[in-house]
Image (cartoon, rainbow, N blue to C red; front, side, top):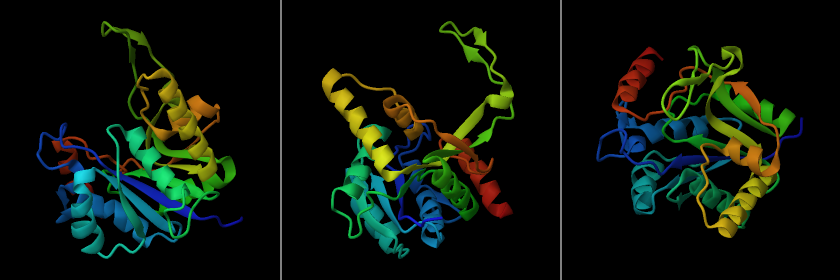
Length: 245
């Protein structure tokens, strides 16, 4: 299998709104270190990832650079860049930075691993499985089959549909793509946004690829422990997971 350059984009531009905290979730302490540290540590130690771009709020760039990247000597972090108001804007900023000559070693024809900085339990096993997935299928996302029965509601809150549980997955990150493929999909998205002047309800990167290029995306099993820190309850769950490791 041909080894291509692998760059991680770690998204850390979220707020503490749903956490009901003045501190953004990615900067809260988990096991005595920021949540973001755990994601970056997995990237730093990975044999798969070559380099990394951290995306954060513009005002948080000095803090992330000084208190996380420099303090913990994350050598794979090539840059800390400003994100946008929406997740898809943050990803696009990072993709442009990665492919437009700003990197010491640009990544235009390799793979990009897009990961939420608020998912602290990224593992080498997950990175390996998604790497194998992208090599075979050009685009893949980490996720797990749901355990609960899922109901689709109508606008009045009544059950409209009950999908076959065996076909329903909860999607996680990383979401991994050929660099040229996801860059082209995002370029088309922003062309559509510029032409229409309207917002676009993008919930993940796979959706951009599915919508803009009609490319199928492979689901790859990750881990039920690969949780995202979003609410105060999640911090307590994360502490329990960490103590069991």
